[in-house]
View 1 (cartoon, rainbow, N blue to C red):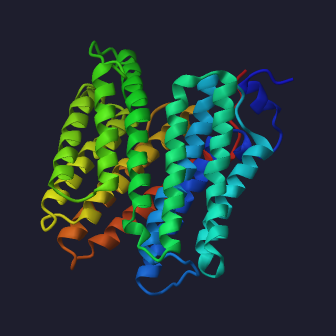
View 2 (cartoon, rainbow, N blue to C red):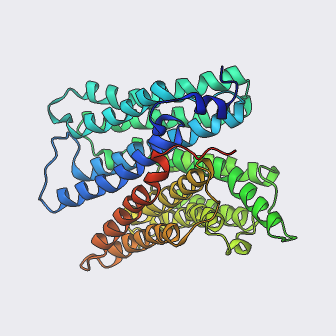
Length: 399
């Protein structure tokens, strides 16, 4: 009988992609990020009309925030939770069912025009609900109460998705509704909480192994907890009242606090390893986005809210998830923890996409929006091509 994670994976004789949670969801999420962007560009250009009840912008927002990010969250949690709890991972056909339920959600949204909104929402929400039940079971069985906060964030993320569906059903604009803001705010809290653990931890390991005397500030000290509390309160205010001077000033304060937090992790010393510095770069989009959102709230004529929001959506979410996906894939498939030139190019393409998207808000007559889409497609499509073979084949056995 398999008595450990490695033994259980060796005992699995089915497709390698079902041997660990990160495999189907990192590959499926990245592929969907590229395909959905292609579909959205075709929709905007009038070359394609999807039979969905969502308008093109709302479909685009939903499928990247709840569709793509939902898959990456699943891959991360199903891989991390066994380490947190000491229990066996979800593999094989139960993992296959989870992946198929996620895929069914993508199809239901795409074909929702002639479907009752409750059926569409039910199919789409089935995936995060099942994932939440799996994580809850593992936390309870492993008595790992410390990580209940991650499950709570997943529950709020699921609620946000439900509110997004409700906005669409009632004829409101979901892309500007409370569901979108709550989902995005929850994603930022996930980056603040989980990133606040992994970024200084991986940085410390790399600095120590490369002979640096400097060390990042230990994670989750009193200062970090104060920043997280501030962030949660400010994001709640933004969700409920996104406009106005008070909200803008609070967002600016949050951005400054996270820049200070990030500086304590000494990321400037990690330039020799892209797998480490990209974590700092991905996290940096959180405070930069908060500063931009604060500026948009204070001076709406100078910076459009949608452009500022993309710093969080494409920058913080896009780059941080790509950073985690590349690192976890290399580590769990027996590869050296080093980012080659192809991986660095993937990171650069996401950063270029964010920059081009911001530029499109300043110079709308120039083709920056198209450049942003091309860079995004190249980055996540490139991940699928570059990392797909690693995700589809079994980890080499050691003798």
